[in-house]
Image (tube, rainbow, N blue to C red; front, side, top):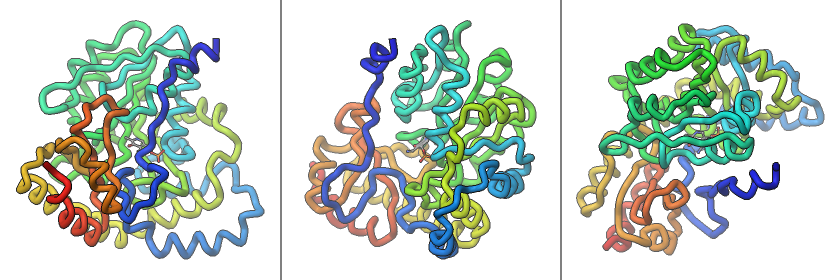
Length: 351
Ligand code: PMP
């Protein structure tokens, strides 16, 4: 049975290829790196790595709870948000039920759901790659135990509204879990941002997940968290591995949250450069999705753009493994110098 399932599990294709490169714009990382305070703490803590971390992670949970105005019992932790999906799917999915997501999105949901034998239903997008709450609701059936999608979405960067999320929550039974993956939420402009955590307080079947891999520049450390009702935390604590968060991840997360100044500076640099890169892309005739609110751009350009850019050492993400045709790409906004280098060589790579 298990082997049969594994045959149909799609492969996870990483944005990081094993080839030499100068500039990596393929994995939505923060190329400025973690805050200097975090680096200092990692150096200090390296002397204590013969110790297991405190397995309740209470300190990190407290800091995250404070940051999100919830209680530590509302926090779940994962070795990246990927591990949170894995653990939640292990709790809620099996071969008798199903998961609803949106088509052509972050692929790991489908991989894990297929692995545990659940059926995966992919709701169609609306115009301009929009997330359609009608299509999501009409994809839900009696077997659906989990609904999950990202906002901002990967790879398009489109976002959902509070109305859309509440409409879904009001129309599903409490036994269906709704996970909103907010890996990129910090990049949403203020006038478009709304507070999803307030809905966790209202709906016990709603979970918001977040990560330190994007804005916080800690993808290599692996740390993600979820905010949910206590009843879900209790189940989660039963299935997670003992010591699933490393000592280094725990300490890095605590310090990263405290360095608001560094991360707001980096955030504004990335958002400013994103505007500039978008304008320049359009000037040379590339199509760019405008309603896109993460640290990357979703573009349509000539075939082989990724290979041509790699000749100059620039890595971007081709989106075939997400189900897009080979003219679509995702380009992470890097450091200003890297973005300038991209804009300099790009005219030689298109057309
Ligand atoms: N959700 C989305 C939408 C992502 O794009 C990614 C990473 N590319 C993740 C989750 C996984 O992040 P983490 O590094 O926290 O596992």
